[in-house]
Length: 166
Ligand SMILES: [Zn+2]
Image 1 (tube, rainbow, N blue to C red):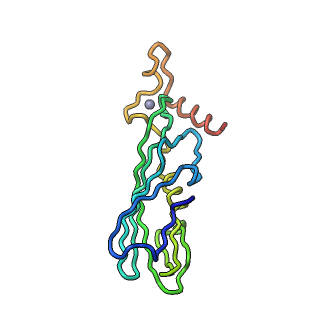
Image 2 (cartoon, rainbow, N blue to C red):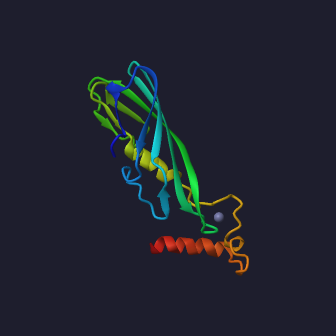
Image 3 (spheres, helix red, strand yellow):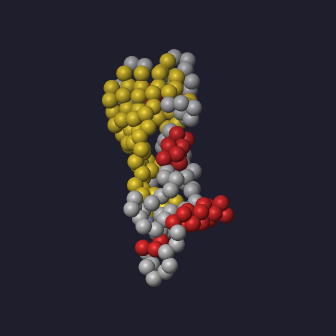
């Protein structure tokens, strides 16, 4: 979980942009049936005016997953945005991980934003529940036309069962 912390005092006044990078292991993102084929990059657009700070995070990576219909592996781009707001004050909290809400009161001198947990949560929540290699994926029968087509609904149940068995 290194490199995902931002100290309020170190943020530049006005607008700024910078990029943070994390490994999936660093964010504890080891997910069954999914492989991160590149690091997770977080482009941060910060605005700090007086005691008000806002951060817009663009979280991007590429995840290799298995199509729920045809069971083929495919690379799914991940792209999601998070907006966080901080009110800085003397005597505020020294730390926030933004797990309860996207707003925090932080100490203007000692305050630290820990982004790792929030980014981890964002990725897990935004992952497709039913990954498809293509919206029009015809399922397994298109992969092997000599085989008898298998009912799509049955495939879904089979996938669910595989998930539970794991
Ligand atoms: Zn497919």
